[in-house]
Image (cartoon, rainbow, N blue to C red; front, side, top):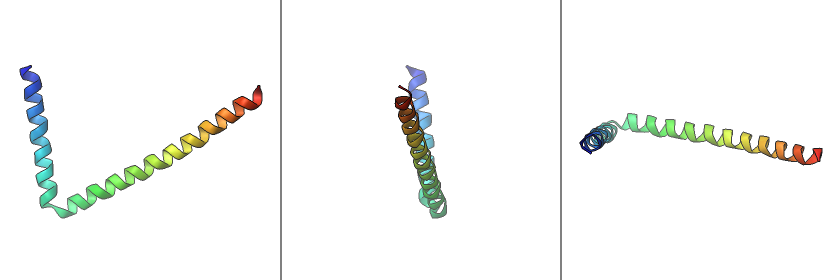
Length: 65
C-alpha cells in the first residue's frame, strides 16, 4: 500500500510540474497543442483507412458465398 501511495505522489508531482512548466511557457503549450492536433489527424486518417479495409473484407467475404 505504501508503494502505491508513493507512486501516486510521484506521478502527481510530475504532472503538477508539467502543468506549471506549460503554464509559464506559452510556446511550449502551443507546441503541445499542435502535437495533439497532429496525433488526432493521424489517428483519424488511420481509422478511415481501417474502416475502408474492413468494408472491403466484409464485402469480399459476402461475394465469395
